Length: 232
Image (cartoon, rainbow, N blue to C red):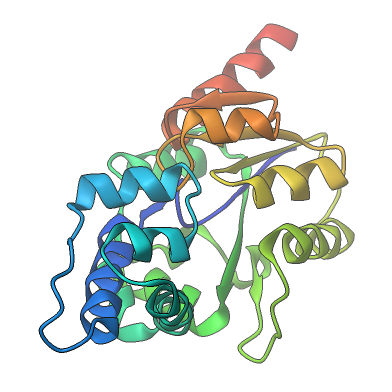
């Protein structure tokens, strides 16, 4: 049996609109009355996010002073994963078709692993009918009461738990879009594919040395299927 463990945000869901709406909200809430700020375009903002520019720096680039930028960053952390903004997420183009291919034709064991909390993951699975791809025992996420540290620390713990609980697989691959996905896979000696459909660009992903970097989930699945054919 071959298993694919995929992150949710990035390979499956595009979060760029949610992040940009939260950016707009936090900028408006943080600026002084009458203060002139510089609203970044969505393209400018998302490029900065993909380059891993800090929230505080994004606030400063938008015209906030240092104190405002700190408040802006804190407000963003409080807001970005709240349900009113999750409605702006959308499936990545081709992702649902790829999940259907995995399920119906390739028959790989499919697992989702995300730093979303249960309520956040369930919201998206229900909204886009994605639960059909991931039975309850193939969903790994944070509990609603989990106290987060950092994704790079928390995701390897989630990966370790998953591999203890899941049945053995002849091969396991991780597909993700961040350094946390790469760290989680490497902590368990799993091959990892970075995808460019998420929140890191190629230059940032290369720093963390995934086994491969491809455009999206579809390309990752093609690569995995091709490697199996080559061995077989």
